[in-house]
Length: 263
Ligand SMILES: [Zn+2]
Image (cartoon, rainbow, N blue to C red; front, side, top):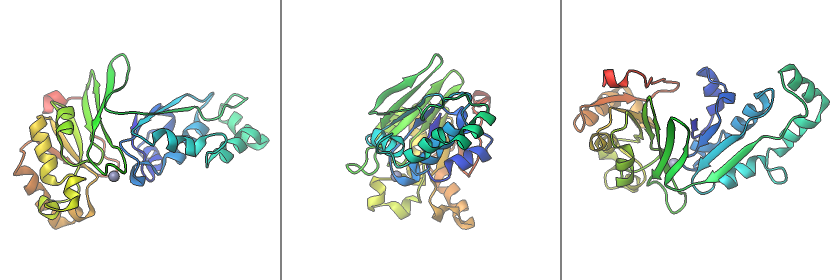
């Protein structure tokens, strides 16, 4: 599962040792470009590397998810259709595909995208993904936050959001809450930003209210990354919540196993 696909996602996945071919479902929180701009690269890399045959990629997200996906790969109107058509049709590309372990004839990228609202999104035998509305830049874009429940634990991915009741409810008792943390409370207080994004304080308040085991701050604004602000951000967070807080970094891995032992 992949949640959002912002700039350089495919490159970062590979750097993290994950092949795009291992991912069969993509969930978009919303369609700002910093959350979806790498999707053409992701779809085409996954399709190109998938052997011996392509496997269906399922795509879920708020309004615009179907339109956005069609706009990339649709046979008639997709802006990247010329690429997969050339790779399917040209003999040199066919040889490359055979060398990789592929079987001809090659199919077009198999992608099914569905626009979704809050509620159950999809489920397997031992897991499910549910969504709740996130408050970001409506009415321009709809936004969803996701909760993944599995036998091994639960994770909430808020996407970009202001603190709100639907996120509190979705996050109740989660093992890990990954929440947007844009800036300090003082910087955002009383501004338009406060209605669209979360501060250190409001992300920490959400973790406290939902009683999660771990809060992972993500989508951290650049202002919070200087040495002075790194000290300040810990103080603002710990004034609100004394739980386990992780400040997200590029390529960071956070294991779910052992969560119940470590708190
Ligand atoms: Zn956004």
